Amino acid sequence: MAKQNFPMDCSFVCITLIQFIASMSFSKSQSLINETNTSTTTTTTKAFFILGDSTVDSGNNNYINTIPENKADYKPYGQNGFFQEPTGRFSDGRVIVDFIAEYANLPLIPPFLQPNADYSNGANFASGGAGVLVETNQGLVIDLQTQLSHFEEVRILLSEKLGEKKAKELISEAIYFFSIGSNDYMGGYLGNPKMQESYNPEQYIRMVIGNLTQAIQTLYEKGARKFGFLSLSPLGCLPALRALNPEANKDGCFEAASALALAHNNALSNVLTSLEHVLEGFMYSNSNFYDWLRERIDDPPNYGFNDGVNACCGSGPYGGVFTCGGTKKIKEFSLCDNVGDFVWWDSFHPTEKIHEQFAKALWNGPASSVGPYNLENFFNKEIKLTIADVVDAPEIHHGEFHY
Ligand SMILES: *[C@@H]1O[C@H](CO)[C@@H](O)[C@H](O)[C@H]1NC(C)=O
Ligand SMILES: *[C@@H]1O[C@H](CO)[C@@H](O)[C@H](O)[C@H]1NC(C)=O
Ligand SMILES: *[C@@H]1O[C@H](CO)[C@@H](O)[C@H](O)[C@H]1NC(C)=O
Image (cartoon, rainbow, N blue to C red; front, side, top):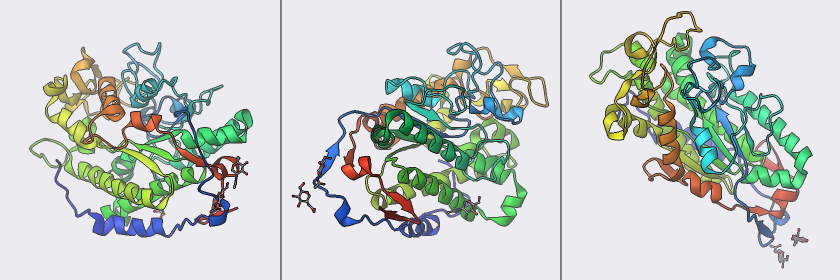
């Protein structure tokens, strides 16, 4: 477990957050929802919506103007042949949400920007390089706010296609899966001296978590109830950050980066626990990618890998110079022979094998990796909808229900 470089417990960040959440007082007008008049949906989840960054982008960045670092639509991305050609996934093949969709008996969830995409089973809004904060890689990514407005577009399209009632059922039964935050701490903070002058780590984390909480809130107001989270990994052990490590620590990881990730994860866990009490019907499945991945980095043979340190594709120390594909400034890069040996595919992203193993852990793994719901239970969980939720869902303004 990484040693934290600064204090980050509930006394600091989460008290403020709990106050912030509590200030969004949610009071349901008693008379309008008759608790005895509830209908329980008998079907399981049919839709899967994904928000986030390159860990889960399935090709949205193919359709935006950005730098080659934020794209993965060229070889050797996708080299394992599961897809006919590179798709924009930052992996040698599939990413975690592809496996989750498969386990849930859903088709592959299309990128929102893919022309003529069918959103009947959800949509993927994620964008490589995106952060929670609008400032993170601004202008080069689809930021979280824009991802939410894309969700709103899909919601309207579904209402037109399925009718208001069916669309509302689909929206409230769906799973909303977030994988975002790494870029806020890497490029957005550690790589941005101005941000570090303006905010200390606690303030910055509070801002990231505050905005993430608002995003959850926005979806909840639109009817979302089931939220899944891929927690942040030990960021300092990414080959790119290992290569940048200013202190030659014993284990070589850039501990300040990992400490930010760990503090973010702790703050998010606390917020999720609070939201469960504040937002009626809010349910979540959180994960512990931090410890899970650290175990594979530290002891690869125990999990079927030979190398937990170096990138399969890249150059320089640990393959940490982000050159995979030769589309960036430096054209030369090396590619390993047996990707199955590696935890890391490129300087920032894990291999498909890691994505698959973690998808399995989230699906039905132990409580040390996923909870309070695992995804299998979560996808199959029936949710109780009041007639009012389905027929006449309340609009929320300024933290209150208005009918
Ligand atoms: C709820 O509705 C039932 C009949 O549908 C009625 O008997 C009951 O009194 C109502 N309860 C409240 C709290 O309005
Ligand atoms: C309960 O729901 C049914 C079906 O929508 C409706 O016909 C009935 O009027 C509702 N009862 C109350 C008390 O709201
Ligand atoms: C959200 O982030 C912005 C910076 O992008 C910040 O000014 C604002 O205070 C944050 N909101 C919350 C609720 O933390």
